[in-house]
Image (cartoon, rainbow, N blue to C red; front, side):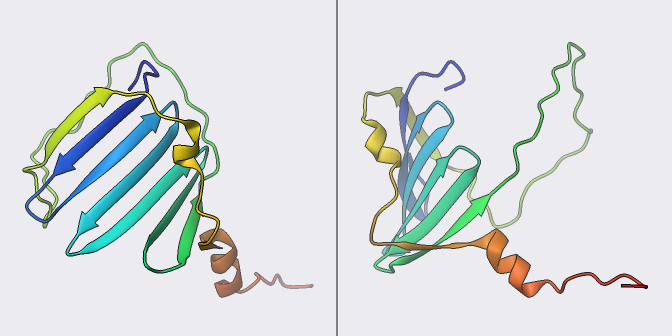
Length: 131
């Protein structure tokens, strides 16, 4: 994936399964868990999630961050860390694949709520003395 080769991955856990397609910085993920299907598309700095049969989804965007390259090795903190409630027995099968760019297109019938806009509406405007 790091070389920019389009990839398709299938995975299976004890709780569900899924498939993902990655091409450059774009990603499409479909998951099936407990009889429900969920989707995620990442395009550029934004990710979109939705499920079936709902016709509503959520849009998350992140400001681009500047990547600083270094030649010095990075040492992770020592210790043992493991997330609770995560099934670590994931069976992945990834392979190079050829697929069209429309894999990353958003469904026209799903209405996405922009989380940044929603948060603006929830946060009060700051007030400053003397205004």
